[in-house]
Length: 101
Image (cartoon, helix red, strand yellow):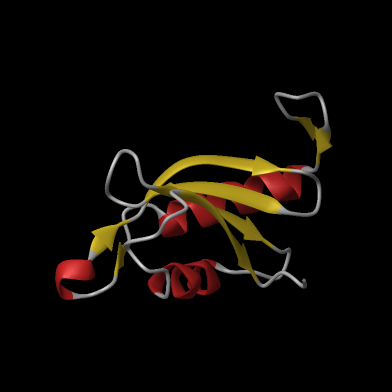
């Protein structure tokens, strides 16, 4: 196990998965035409079973946080980002990816 910055034990596999997903998402292009933007991964966090990846959506003040289940892949995350409207009232939205509600 690897300890996170908040002293909660995090399994090495979770850390490795988070790093892998972040690498797969960073600098990917989402959208088309005027709605096209580049993913910038700002941070990866875990609460044990769920990964949280903070994404900048091209603009410094526009970010979302992906809440990824243990089954979610980078492809799932990119699909969730692709359907987000660029103009949103909530600039720091949490986007569930493969999470049950």
